[in-house]
Image 1: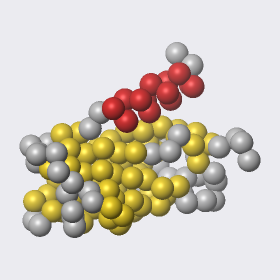
Image 2: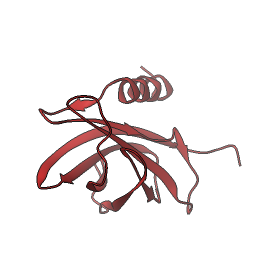
Image 3: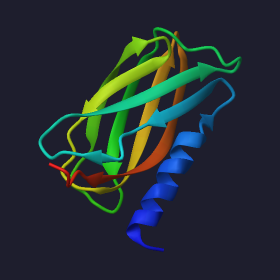
Image 4: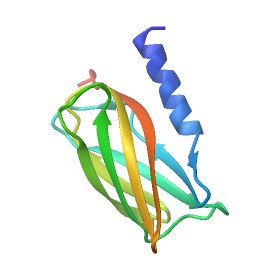
Length: 124
């Protein structure tokens, strides 16, 4: 399978699946590409077990490139609308990443991982 097909399949899986715990449904939304030295928005949508947006939670994420050891990209996420939290990341390399997401909603804590792929934006 070529790199482009693999990327498309990964992105589709990320967009259509949410990671469910007993208490939260987490959806990670990432762009398909990035521009070096520019911030790239990363969104996390959080729903409770009844499907309602989780408001006012403390949310953070660490992005780690798989197979590399050049350090994590850490983000504190800000709520921009009901249950949607946004952070900014500056990517140096295209590839496969793991987002380790931490949520604290009034003492109810959750930690989990989501994977995504991102490529360099060649259309500049």
